[in-house]
Image 1 (cartoon, one colour):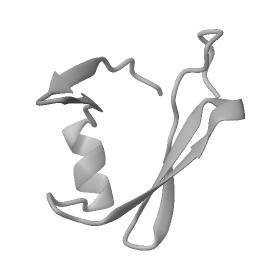
Image 2 (cartoon, rainbow, N blue to C red; image 1 turned 180 degrees about the vertical axis):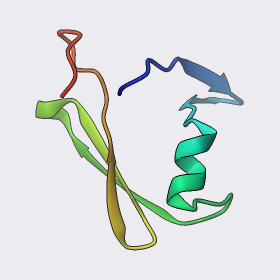
Image 3 (cartoon, helix red, strand yellow; image 1 turned 90 degrees about the vertical axis):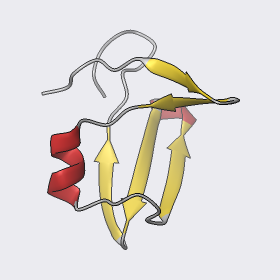
Length: 66
């Protein structure tokens, strides 16, 4: 189930927080490398942690889930 998240300001950057349960499930730790793949036509971003793709969906511009 997708839960809305807010974009927050952190220093001179913007960030989107990730729920702690999801971080635990993926085993992500501070400082871990991540590859970010952007698909503008689908309004989606895929984050790849430790060589295993896991997609975190964004809400598209029409307000529906991908």
